[in-house]
Each structure stands twice: as C-alpha cells, then as structure tokens.
Image (cartoon, rainbow over all chains, first blue to last red; front, side, top):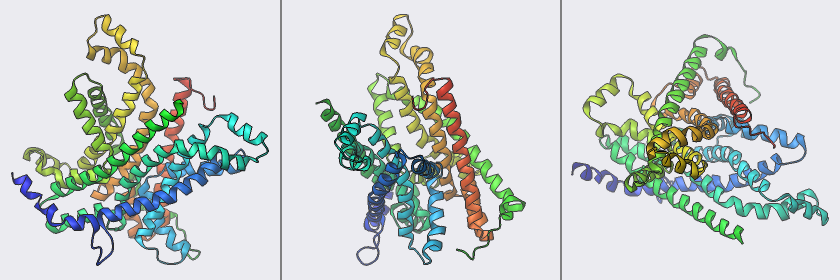
Length: 233
Length: 235
C-alpha cells in the first residue's frame, strides 16, 4: 500500500502538472505541451505542403534541392535540429528568440520534412488520369495540382497527419532540454523538489502522454477505416 | 553572424576532436547493442501478438500501445530515475557499478524500438500467405515450430529493410541519452561548444556524422532491395 500513498505527490501537484503557473504566471505542463504540438502541427502542415509540392515538381532544379533538404532533415536527430535553431535563430534575426518559439520553429522545421513525405505519397496515390484529364480541360499543371489533385489527396492524408500530430506530442518532450516548462520539464522540476518519488512521477506523466496520444491514434485509425469505406464505393 | 570566425581546427585535431570521436563510439555502441536487443524483444512481442492465446495477445497489445504512445524521453527518465524501486537490490547495485546511465538508456531505447520492430515483423509475417502455415502444420510442425522454420525465416527477409530503418531511428534517438549524461555524440558536441564557444563547428561535425550514418545505411538498404528482393526504384 506504500506505493499508493506515494501517489499523494501527484495529487499535491496536479494543477502544476496540467497548467503550470497559469493563470498567474505563464502556461506550463500539459497545456503548454498541447500548445507546442498544435502550433507546430499547423505550421508544419503548411511547411509539408510546400516542401511536398516542390519535391514532386517535374523540374529537376526544383525537385532535387527540395529532396536534399527533406532528406537532410530526416537524417538528423530532432535534438540536433533544436540545438541548431537555438544557435542560428538569434544569429539570423539579430535578436533574442524565446525558448518556446525556438522549440516551435525547430519542431516545425523537423516535422515539415516528414509531412512532405505524407503529401508526396498522397499526391502520388491519385491516379494519373486525373492530372491528364485536368490538363486536357485547359488547366495549367499548377492549377490542376491545386484544384484537382490536392483536394482529393488531402482527404487521404488526414490519418497520416493525425499520426504525425501524435509524434509531435511525443517530440514536445524534447523542449525540456532548452528549458521550456512543458509536461516533462514540470515533472523533472517536481522530481527535483520532492526527491523521493521519481517512479510515481514519471509513471504518471507517461500515463498522461499515453491518454492524449492514444486518443489521437484511435482517431486516426477510425478515419482510416472510414476512408477505406468511402473508397470502396 | 558575419563577425563569427570559423575555426575548424578545434574539431579536426586535439582534445576536442577526441571527445567527438569518443562520443561517436558511444553512439555506435548504444545503437548496435540496442538494435540487437530490440530485435530479440520485438520478435518475442510480435509472436505473442499473433498468438492464439488471448492472454499473450492482450499483454502484447498493451505493451505495444503503451510504448508507442509515450515519449522516449519520458521512458528514459522513468528507467533512469524511477527504476530502482522496481528492481531488486542486487540488480541495482550491479547497475550502479557498471555505469547506470548507459544501461538505463539502453533499456529505454530497446523497449521503445522493440515496439516498432514488433509491428514491422508482424506485417512481414502477415504478408506471408496463410497456406504456408497450413502446409507446415499439416506436415506435422507445431505452431511454434512452423513459425520458427517456415514463416519467420521468410518474413525476416522481407522485414530487413524496415528493420534497418529502425536502426537508423535508433541511432538518431540515441541522442536523447545525453539528457541523463551518457557521453554520446550529441553530448560531446554540446560539451565542445560549452568549452570552446565553437558551437557551429561542433554541431556541424555531429550533424555531418549523423548524416553520413543515414546516407551509408540508406544506400545499403537500396542495394539490398535491388539485389535480394529484386525491387527496383521507379519500377
């Protein structure tokens, strides 16, 4: 029963776990985790669309460099990308960038490369005849892409986007390293303060992450099933 | 930025060069021992996941969902900070004497990667026609033996490319071990940065090494796909 009574440390800090010092201070904990993940997800959908469209371009001088960028990002650990952002952003913008923004930009940059592969697969999954038909009705290649191919492709990409969002939620834990007080950082703080309950604290936040991620994983599975049903008609 | 003076000699020779090399060694050690262990664990989990016994199937499912839906960093912290309460005292003492950072990182990476490998193996096995299992069992093999001699050897052949990709992911994920003080490549790059203020050089070196690992291994997978599985790019 000692194990159970140790979970008192969770109950004592429950508000701190979920929102940090908000509303008096800045948002932290689960709230900040979700904010980081959502902001980077929205940004990297756009980043992924741009990179993905560039990488399927028929012109070699467009597709080749964009594939190089995509594969370079995919070959490097996320931690490395965050460190690079930490160094380069102040140098590029000539002023201090807050840690939260650094992390959002790092996550966006990193995830855009992965999103672009989803976009690429989505575009390539649309039958060739669609593009030919669109061009033969007088649309240009880009018009056909934007009005005919992408709207159909995007529907098939949604489950993969949701999966990528789950990865993002997990990846936000790396924000801990540059000192952004999201859930993992809050947990290490509470662990450092209380000293005696690391097992309980880290198990608890693992469960919190699990509940959030599992909800979205299930959502993506449902969406996939629904899309298959649609295709069958 | 323009006023920054590049000094590549910091990382091409001397003490800091040695730090980076020793970091690379630890990264490689962690990745190779990690992939071997997680292949074994992944194989066990995959077989359990496909077992006819509900208890096995169910526990494999719980394991898979839980490990795949929690961040690796949290799992590393759990094993590093929290595992002493779960393990027997003798194991704890042994771990403390052998450098617990490395062991904790290895355990976390193994468990995390094995979940992904198990799913890769499972989809490899599912791609083997059902008749193979039926034929094996009708010629007198038990379920386990037909798995062992007939299904798995074929499945593993198909699973090798995704497995190699998991190795790449593992090598990249091993950078998280720096958070608990394992002196691998990223840790050493950061160390060099804080000693010399030559962050650009140190991080460029580490980035190039990670990229080189990716490029080499991706090339090998392409070769394997073409020569062994006869899958041709663009075909």
